[in-house]
Image (cartoon, rainbow, N blue to C red; front, side, top):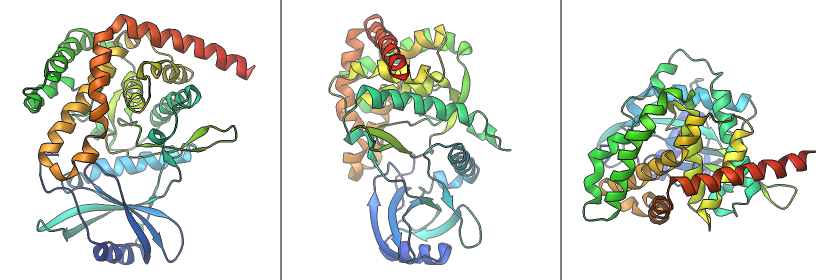
Length: 361
């Protein structure tokens, strides 16, 4: 996000006024929720119900069409049985409203949506059992398969050509590498980018295309206790990084983020991959590139977190959540090498599928 003061910071009284004017609701309770560059608030009105008020940053608010497509995608996924938030219409029937307000940086326009509230805790806060990781892979693949059936007149807007978070655009990280000056990590990131360009790009024509959620991370997946003393996925949040990509990109993103809180990150790939392939089996070129795509996503996450801290030093703690553990994982996986990591992942996936099939039969 290029503009330093783009993140909204509405006061309690401004939020109450918005809720009343747009939704005819009286905010009885509210509390902030984490966000990368927007303002998210839990709101419980006197009239009943629980909601999330999402106020987009002023830069992203300029592109109302892409937000409209994301909002439609959430409704479509919800209609197809996935646990996704949906937008609540305003009193005049709109799913979003562009509001001009002053949060201390002068008057700016912010896009406002009221979303349904999903219960659960983030998957990062519970033990990552193989069964839960399998379910995560399966859910991510199902989500992409459902999105392929969605129709909208502006779907082409998801071809986000220079979108820094797309795994098609790993080479764009070169423009941000100066944030790692003096850090030994810089050399590893440069090497990953080079291997991506030499190895992944030539194979990309054989990847199967789809629409990616694009940020299937450990803070965007909610879980609740299930009936077997474990957990089940109860919510998928944040469609702000949706873009046209490839199935294998979503899988790589999912594996990478599920590693962050795991005590033994190499154990994550197998069950996530098994769950994914129970819905959408990979072809050979997709399999060959999975290791480098996971490393590429680590590089995107680490470099862009450092860059964001230069813009928002006050938000460093949240911005660096992934980065602190991610640096060690990236370096470890780079040292282990493609052959070793792939062997572990694909063997574990095969073993896991056998046990799952036994359980079903």
